[in-house]
Image 1 (cartoon, protein in one colour):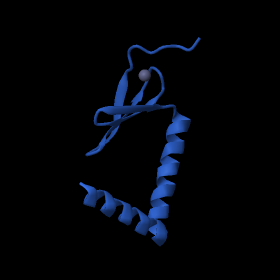
Image 2 (tube, rainbow, N blue to C red):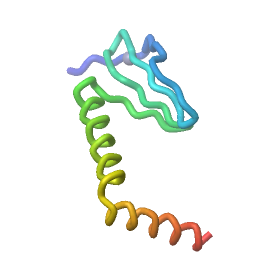
Image 3 (cartoon, protein in one colour):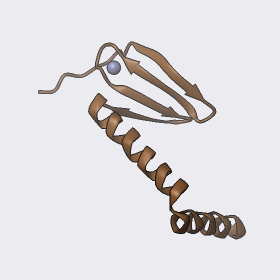
Image 4 (cartoon, helix red, strand yellow):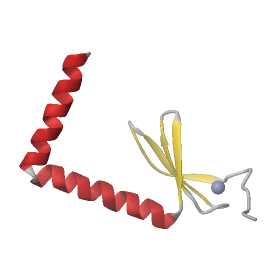
Length: 81
Ligand SMILES: [Zn+2]
C-alpha cells in the first residue's frame, strides 16, 4: 500500500510570473504550481521534465522551421479570437 501524505511541508525554491515551485520535506516531491494547477513530480520525473523543456527551447532557438511553425500557430490562434 502506498503511503498517503495529508500534510506536505513545502519550501519555496523558485517563483516567477507563471507560478512557483516548492519542494516537500515530507514526501520528497517537487510541486509545480501554475495558477490554479499544481503538478507533483518525484525528483527524477522533475529532472526529466526540465530536460525535455530545455530540449524543446533549444530546438525552438536553433531550428528555424520549428520556430516558424510555432509562429504560424500563434498567429493562427490569435486571428481566430
Ligand atoms: Zn509532500
